[in-house]
Image (cartoon, rainbow, N blue to C red; front, side, top):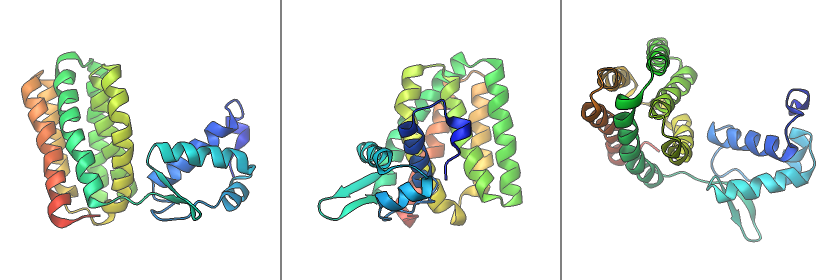
Length: 219
């Protein structure tokens, strides 16, 4: 049941859409799950109309698949899907790191360092939920540090899809222990204002993940 008292200043269709999207991205609604309008409406305490609108919007984003005469399902995500996403992220996040090294504000660097400290602690503690959260935050903060709105808008959908992937693979994520070092190399290059090194470090970081996904079929 949604808490409407907190969010009643926003249109209901937006609240329902964002809630369903979050459930798909975080794996609460697992790939292949049928999106039953009646059940979802009852669970969320709303009518079927905003549910139906949300499902159609999520279909356009590739998170829901609508099959004729069968209904709507949370989209599957394959190894090939993730490799394609990582191919694009590799180039775009490398560019983001490059620009961040030239334009980043001091407070933005501090935020990135704090996110990395929290991520490192999560790795040490074996806290999967925090690893996912702070890994995602680390990458998002670097893009924000580029201070390029267009780049941020282009990368955001890719990072959302990557978030969904994280929830699927992180329980058995073989590279978690190597991530702190790779993240630190990126931070050091950005802090030094070395745009080329920052780009290379970010590029290498995602390239290694792409190779792992491709060779070991993590999904």
